[in-house]
Length: 462
Length: 73
Image (tube, rainbow over all chains, first blue to last red; front, side):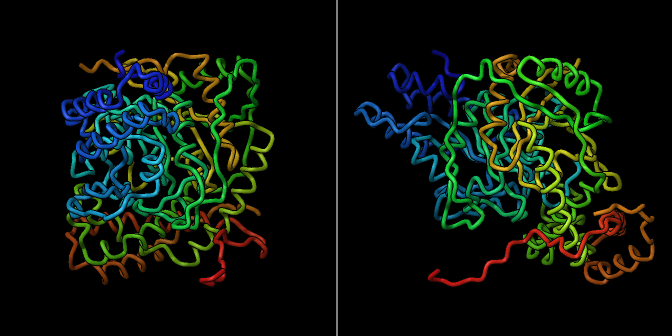
């Protein structure tokens, strides 16, 4: 079988039945990473030696009847903010290109325990975009490129995680989201991305950008695959106090006949690109096949300002040394050389006010979501921007109420492909649910993917 | 919780805060970069003004869990 563009579940069944060798599978993806990775600026380090060691071990264990589960023998890539012993962990930043850690991040450890095979550290926007970059060329590995267009940005900050999955360089990848960093590359690269509930997955060994906003999650070809990966990486961790004492069991049950209750924020697609609005309107019709759709409202609050104040204050503190020392002048994006200094203007009182408002937003969002299975909205308001030029302005940042609310309230969301623009760039649909309802948003996304075939379309690569 | 009509950001606040930042970092920034920082400060002040326009009750606590520490607990 050709293993490229096959869901993890299919690969896993073939491996377990010994119709597919983990070693051959790993060699296939290593070859693609080496040959195609540079085309998309998707890769920082290929972990060939480690990968082949893990693949041989998986093959031996499975041959001996010791199958660890659905990720056993499956190659994957990790965003380069996750520590992996024996390889650089650059955080996408030129000044840190030789940084190494002695141990693996908890997520890497858990994936190893599940038998998955780390084949690459994937490219990312420098410091996960925390310095305020405004254009795609913001990583020492170059701007991430979407496999759907030579001049199309992959999104960020999990740029390589999105493009590597979309180009068939890995079956799945791990990304991180503080605000938009999983959903944006999932949308621009036309793949499925899961932002888990805050606290679902340990961040130990991951670069911290904003302690109260950072989440780790998977990107894959299907929502089912994301659920399989979440089950492997979720759970408490004594090294991360934010990691909740909750395990996660992926429910892969058939969604046929299940009826979902969806909500749409009034005017949520207002201001979106025409192709995105058209795809979203069409999606709402399709969603009627698997549930009901109703308009809902949230109080008029400055959602973006609240989330941005928290992000600015925490990021300024997390990178205080780099900012105060002037080391940010060594970053790739010219705007990252000075933008962070303005964050000294966030006053303590305003940060606390943002945290008080966060409580209001959490309660109001939960009040609305308690009656629903998920809020639906475009995954991003636009298709992939071109590589040159700013995609947001310093004066008027693009408003993203779903992203602001979802991230400040720590809510789970899944982004799935839902169409294409006239120029062939993917559009995206997101399902956002109550805290800890990761299984419900995944079920809704699985039901969507059982009804549509957007996730089965892949860019012409070879 | 009530959102009051949002006053325009006070340009004097942005000017004072920008001066503070210029005093701290100005010697390492070019005029163009300083102008970028000034615009960034204006944006931060606008964002703070939006927050201040929402009235909360005294009981609305910040979401910031504090847990007393004890190594053997």
